[in-house]
Length: 110
Length: 112
Image (tube, rainbow over all chains, first blue to last red; front, side):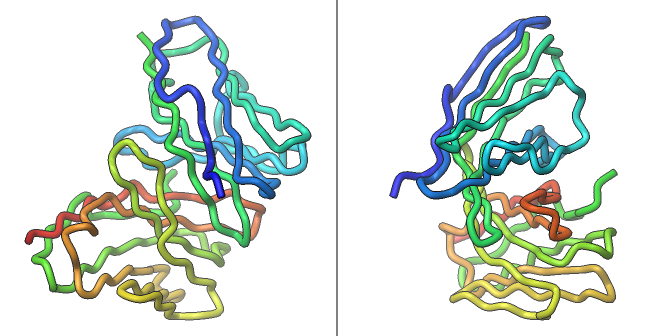
């Protein structure tokens, strides 16, 4: 069974630009969550989608948004990038209250 | 506001000995806890979980202990192996879908 797939693996952007990250969950998993990992901060919850609806949202500004499609694939968008948005963005699909993570997208904002 | 804390950024243990990783939380509503292991350039991998109705859960070399009154959980790895060298994260949830609060991680090094 294929795992969670995230694309792209690495991304370099400049301040003010916007970026879209993609996540394909494990087949059959309907919940997709997004987390931001920065050094010293651990993993911070961004949002969770279930059956195309946002079910939970973390404490991030409105520049961070997401959506989920009918095939459970999810995208995350960050507008007006800031230097502090440089981080590893992890997507996870879930089943039986367990999160299964992808390898992440490493975003660098210059 | 860090609701889940791992106060030891790093830990070194001899191969064959026990590794004990600790995690504290502040939110009394947390009722489900997970441990994850993370290698560089990979996503976190699920290790073991525990529900608040239990105080211990075992899976092979891994055992998680939960002390609800102290709001403390620990992961024991016995015996430790060099392949266990990784960053370990604890995570907690308050039964609100799949919103988990993660600690900042403990880097475990198992010395051969």
